[in-house]
Length: 174
Image (cartoon, rainbow, N blue to C red; front, side):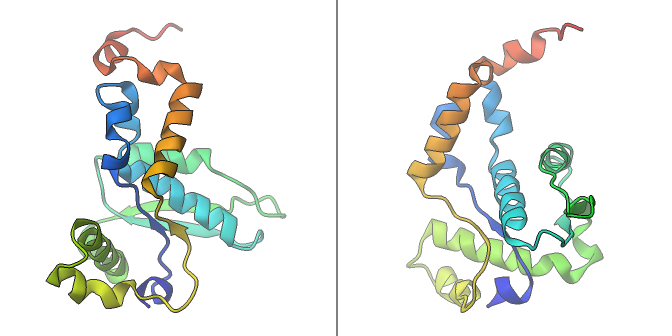
């Protein structure tokens, strides 16, 4: 019930599903689970809100991920019929500045326990959070589908398969 009541959108991307495909490459930094989850969230929002609605996304402060998440946000824009951006903004707020991020923390913890061990006490205690009697939007990909997406992206962009140290040391030509 929590995801629906708190208006949560969900994106989960277990890195162990695809880490062997990107280890030691430029793509390794670009395919952190946080980014894959953000892409899933943005995609779910754009596919499921009415075309004339606008949404602002609020995340808990994540200094490591914020700049690249803003790039994802800016590259995934669509417009309302009146020409306004459907994703009206993105904001990062400190953890203790608002209770609005707490439901997401509870949900993330519950999902983590399920990925770790569905027979554990922690998972049993969290299970009510995961019961949802109404539709929720998001993505919890299975291993094979996530690997196909990553592999397809790498096949279409072979430059991402290069050594990350070499990539960072190569000057960018004007």
